[in-house]
Image (tube, rainbow, N blue to C red; front, side, top):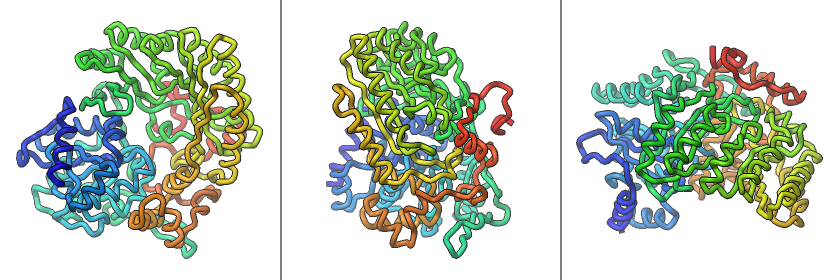
Length: 575
């Protein structure tokens, strides 16, 4: 049976192109672990970036490890076979370092699962000098690492391209000197952008409120997020090519960060400042993709804001390639972009108004009006696109019942517009309960309670059910509330997470919280005080706490914040 598991990994590798594989023993093995399926992990551009960065070193053999499918997990357990890497089928416990990519809160349960399957001690405090060093990076690691602070030895805070080289140098130097694990962690904590949670004590009041974060002697009081100043120096594209991904695209990142200041959006705050790759660099990557004959997937927080988007589209189509984007801003989309997408075979045009009323769009500082949505839809219809999708959130701060009803009204009028212009296509609403995130203006605010979210979802589904070709899809509120606790969770929540993993995973989380003496409601629905100390307070994103607090007040007052511009010094990220 263990042989069969190895054979499956070999077959997976045989279906790939572009991977790195070094003979065992020639380089130090480092595992790049994605806590979800191969299909999901290989669709993540960040994984490709770090995979290539590590393998281009002359001392590292970076191999990928994924969470197996459910049936395969049973076979691993029944045969007591340790979780293995794709490239050399090396057991996870035999790697010198394990680096997790954290993109989603629900994957925290899978981190623990993968360590267990790999025969690696889950708790960092129980791992010794001979055990792998376990690190983690990615969006979730950057904005709140605390729920996994008992598991992860060190977190990468910010963008890995500018942190990992120095981190790996310190790691190798410490290994060559044969220092203890504790000494290695203390050295890693001196690397800009590296957070070692075991070196920071979190003190609580008798009521369970965080009272202080105390660093050990000679440990930085705060960890500053690191970010790439010049994206052109770090091209970002698909490295390992396989058909077994979500959309089977060749991914190319055109830009990083977003300057639109949407108040709900973690990416807009934790990946400032907004930066664009030059057209020349992106077109060179397009030419590189020619030989692979894959559809180009353009990546960026607001792809239609890319300054040379029209010219880039012409270049891609001129090379005989097709292209796609996840979504775009309705206020900056151009007919040229829409025509290029239609020519590439795009069937559904996706927009993200997030809210149905102009009042709610003012609360979140979305900056999109109805006229933008209708104009973008008109562009799609003129280009021959028949289907449209809207990303919508319910339970936003300061939302009222009429704001939810406005979503029904807006969807109905957009569908009317489609039909008036000869389209019998589908209008899909992808609806998600709003989850407050750290380092955003809404970090102080409660999440909408379960009854409200369920009522809002019912308003949408019942209000639109009689309309032909309107589909309403609502994410599970139950899962959203688990995400809500983890997103703003502290080290106490981390203990509940570990207990849940002992009893079945995410489905056992609510019971685990109760068994740990913690209240889900307290983490979800409590309004935080203006001066409350947050678990993520040791991290510095580059902007002041006062700045985002004022953004929260502006949301309540429906006041706008203009987008980033050259020479702007409002938030502090740019100096």
